Image (cartoon, rainbow, N blue to C red; front, side, top):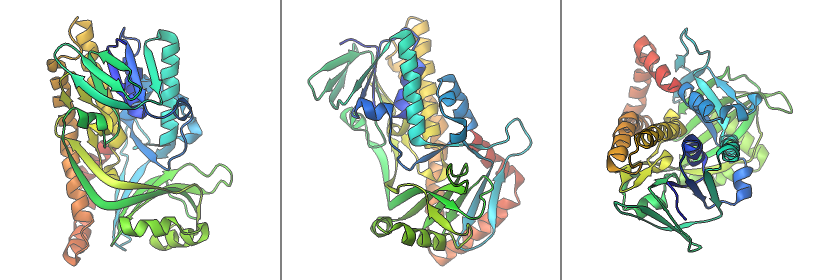
Length: 398
């Protein structure tokens, strides 16, 4: 089976890459281990994705944004950072400009569904993408002439370029011998939707407590009750989170009210609960011979700065630009010059914030008394520095 580009991974980044490359005269294959039904109708997984304004522009270009219902897009107009039990917060808002929002919040499963539908529409028009669902990759090899992907079924796909979009624990990246800086924080995130008595003011919270980290992502009102609604992300040591997840709904609600110190009033569980290990990843290399990584396979961010999927879309844009430029000039889309240029650009775009995020999490999860006091001083000082707040706002907006 001959292809030009073989994408391993049919998550939102892999689907968006296939959609971005569709219509340029390329033969594209997307390999995904999930079933066709799971791709077409992904289940709710608890995750709400914070999208920058730049990411929204890219999703519009890929025909994804308009496939997400307007009432499923929650505006994010402010961000607040708390330390310990202090009521003082570093507040980041939108200055006068062309956008009324820092960004938008959309459920991960809805992004996946919209990306799949957009790709299906493009396939209907161009017929240039083959979706191979329910298959697992057993081997990848590449040389100067071509790249090959062997599936568990025995099928061999050949092409000019393989792209790994198969998560931060990418098996494809490992098959190509690319190591990664993987940092396991020894903690687990519990994510769910909660309704609450007091309004969130369309503000996201990042609350570095003592022994826990809380995040609040503001959502549109609950569809049935009209109550204020948010996505809650609670991060605890892995050995503590299981017991909390196993509590019945009422006990869980009382526990969350206590953890939020009653600041949201009465809270009610509005969804299923989901657990995710807290691990960040940065690949030692983004490319190899006729091989590139995108999305979390290249950079798997700690969620504190909310840039994971945004970096994934940025990798799609950068790689697509390089591939289509080579195509227009009659060059080799899998050439090392094309891939190295992609790697350099994406590394410049991601490395500084990745390192800064690691530093922030190290400082703000340190439970010693001097660290607690220092954090409070830092937040109060940052609140008075308008250029700093503007820079953070610009980062959140992309």
